[in-house]
Every structure is written in structure tokens, then in C-alpha cells.
Image (cartoon, rainbow, N blue to C red):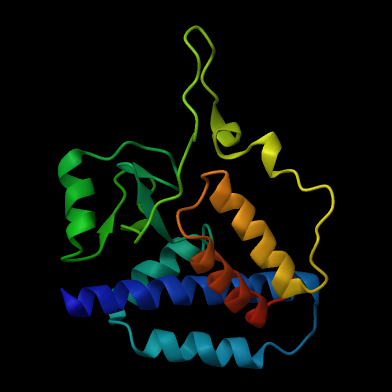
Length: 183
């Protein structure tokens, strides 16, 4: 199981790099992408050939080839997975694919929370993206002066509103991503 977890972590990082490369290429055409290409090659060299083949095949359709399962649902296509498959993905004994969209699945360490507050009786439930948004997240004026402080301020707000469990982990991941490709 340790080697599968290592493969899962490599796939997550590989996907982050390929998405960052695509964003970099789109925002700055013609710019050297050598560093990202080398990092992508290094990750691919460490993965089994059958996994790489499946990953590349899916990425030809969509950059998100490796997606998390949230509450028993494929986060890419929205299909409710059979309970046995969701449990198998969580057990992480091998890499499983969504029966609907064929993307590779993993169980994240923590899941993004949906609605923080329950709706009142008779009130329509929020649908789609509205479940993950709130008027309280609109920050008209950031207090922070630096990029890192602004990311920390926004992450703290997301945690305070119940959209993420660990704001500090979000800050860490956001700063890591900013180091690869600045937004």
C-alpha cells in the first residue's frame, strides 16, 4: 500500500505540473518551459509504464486525468460511484478508474466541505457551484500588502467560513503553486 500511496502522490504532483505547464504556455507563448518539462519527465520516469499510458491517454481529452472522490462522487463527472468502488479507492490498494468518465480516482486526505449551513425548511437547496460559495467570501479590501500575506488572509477567510478544514495547508499548497506558476 505504501508504493500505491507513493504512486498516487506522484500522479497528483505530475498532474499539477502538467496543468501548470499548460497555463504557463497559454499565458506566455514561446517562453522556455524547460524546467517544467524536466520536472514532468522526472515524475514520469518514476511511475509504472501502464499508469503513465493510462494517464497520458486521459490527458489527451482533459488535463484533469487524476481526480479526487468526494463523498462517493467522481469530482470530474459528478457520477455517484458504487459504494464498493468508493471504499476501494479509499483503501488505495491500486489505482481505480471512474466507470463513467474513465478518469483515474484517488481519495484525498481532506475533502472540500460543501454547504456549511443547512437550508431552512422550505428553502431550496443550493445547486452547482453555489454550494461552494458565500457572500461572506467577498473580500472588498484585503489588509495584506504582500502576495504571501494575501494568500494567508484569503485562506483564513475560507477556513473561518467553513469551506476548508486547514487554512494553513491551503496556504502551503497555494504558495507552492505560486512558486511554479504565478497567477
